[in-house]
Length: 308
Image (tube, rainbow, N blue to C red; front, side, top):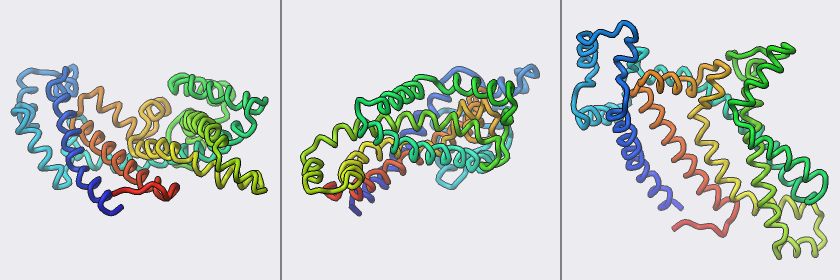
């Protein structure tokens, strides 16, 4: 286990190097001049050349990339072209907002999705199963950019039950609609996967043996069936945990939430490559660590899984 952990941690710098190089190359050779976009109608070729030189954007690719990696090793994520502020300051002020929003949606989605999936499996081919499956299909089918405007019109504009957007903290009423939108998709995914995994597991010999021993149905479902059905769900959970720091681009933009997702959208349109690079690196680290913890969780759920 320790050897596997060290091997994965040693692979992390290589992964980050590959990710940052690809992202940097796409920004360097891709269309769009960030200086021209930032200057807008005030664009002047002579001034733009001077600004580009001051920012070091007129140097060769490998020199720029080398400087970026050297700064990254020293904790320097660069300076935003659009905001003219250190990138790390922009991220720190928004990271906690996105983390709270995504964590709340993930917790609600897991604690609602898994029980509903188990219920649908043990009530297979009944009206309960059909209702849950129908809701799951609806939750997966309707994209975020459709659900969010509908909720805004219904709960904010039409009946004025909730405020239309903004952010005053996780316990504020402004967080209700964004969390609902995010939770719907998470619940649908976990219901669908839990139901499928449970239907596959309940037919196994060890589940029938547990029932033949006279164990209570609750013990059979939770201890024997659900525990083995959790392994594929842990993979999905790890991917979602990795997305906690990445924010939700569409939701934060629609509801005006000052998080990482909204910052990413603004940076993409402004070609603010230092911010884009920092967000890409941060998300890559989060997913790599989340997958590492998922691997460790496999051995906890199923003692038969061992790493050399």
